[in-house]
Image (cartoon, rainbow, N blue to C red; front, side, top):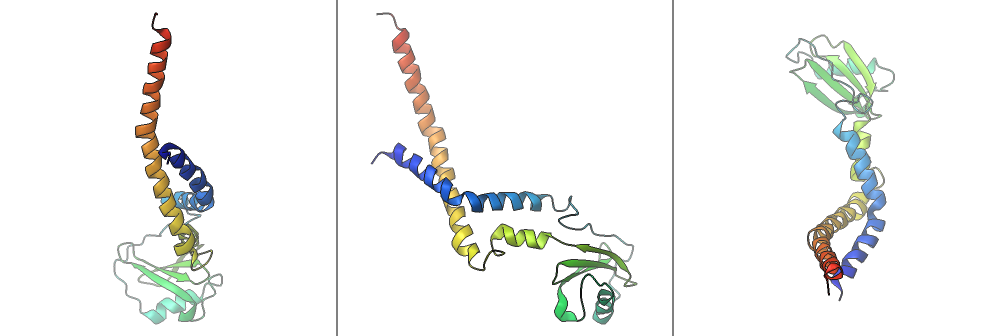
Length: 178
């Protein structure tokens, strides 16, 4: 078996197999890296002076139901609550990805924004495509990418220096006087 030829074939076919999942992971990963800087991805968190949550759950739900875009009518419409005592705000995320930020003391609505980071995360890990895509598409792509990285490292550290030494020897033989 010719290891160099096999290594090149692994690189060729491995890259063809994984190109789409890897481009998806890289593209969404770049967006997630800057999600705090891009309010289009994740809305900025409003800060208040209230450092303790003095609201109860009924007050939080009542504040959330006042925002039409979020479509919250009951707790069944709420995906999660994110209480930030240090910032004096509670974030209410609706299942339709709208985020409401309310004051931790007065329950006043401070901000209403569409939050894309959860959608981007689900695309990033493959779960947006299908529940099994994470395990049967994105995980194998990651394993193949690891193999490509290792074989590429081999080509760079072993094959490339050997070719350079071979070219130097050939050049030296051609220029050597007879």
